[in-house]
Amino acid sequence: MNIWGADEDGFFVWAATDGHGRGSGGVTGTGLKAASQLYDAISALEGDAVGSMNVVHLDRYARQPSYIYGPVVLRIRRDKATGEISLSPVGN
Image 1 (cartoon, rainbow, N blue to C red):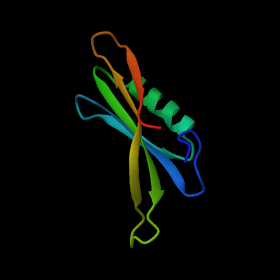
Image 2 (cartoon, rainbow, N blue to C red; image 1 turned 180 degrees about the horizontal axis):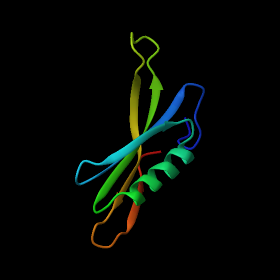
Image 3 (tube, one colour; image 1 turned 120 degrees about the horizontal axis):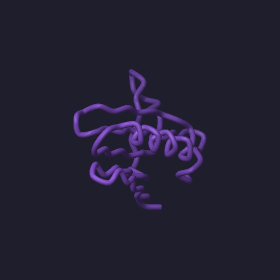
Image 4 (cartoon, helix red, strand yellow; image 1 turned 180 degrees about the vertical axis):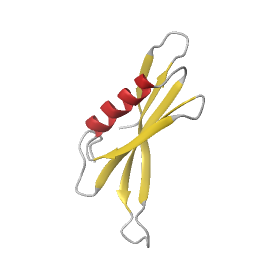
């Protein structure tokens, strides 16, 4: 799977949180959209904030809908002091 486009079974899940436990997350079919949503979420949080994006697949054998999580493909961090946002692609 190319991290910027989904294969027929893959999705991208992202999550962002700040130092106070506030945050948001989402699931989308393309890495580019997930990265954009993650960036927007980090930008909206106050203070230090961190986030990541994973590749996921539906677990077709689970009794309840669930995902099988693959590797983290992107990490993002916002520095409280400077407001600077840094992206760190992982692997690939």
